[in-house]
Amino acid sequence: MVFFPQLMSRYYLDTGVLVWNGNGTIGKEMIQKFFEELPSSEHVIGSLDSQPVLDSIVSSQLTCVIQVSGFVRFQDNVSKPFQQSFMITAEGDKWKIACDNFRLQESVEESKKHSSELI
Image 1 (cartoon, rainbow, N blue to C red):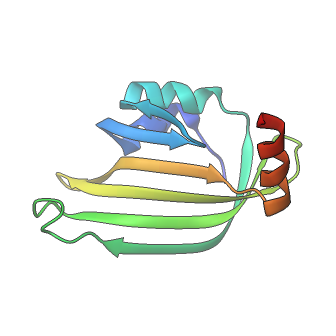
Image 2: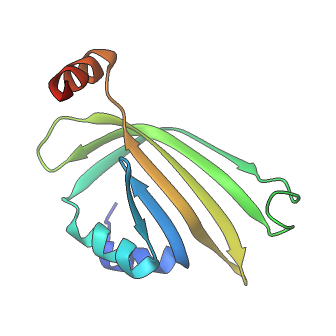
């Protein structure tokens, strides 16, 4: 599959939010810039789920949450597990990403190591 980072902003709302490993970016232009600066990657999806959001929460705006998990490898590094959640909403006859949260997953041992380095 070929990935075109220069086209990513077309999938986000103008006011879309991207949180990548705890670092937030707001607005589709800034999200576009962020994607263009990422190294090349290969994703393998292990699971995918989507659920509609209750009308009362989103003022009857057609909205869904999509959860994805799997493995990602950046350039020549080892594969790491990841978790990603998208909130998408209907805008006219298209779906747009309102919020996107990506997180690399660490093992308990890696988390302990990083925590001890901070202390």
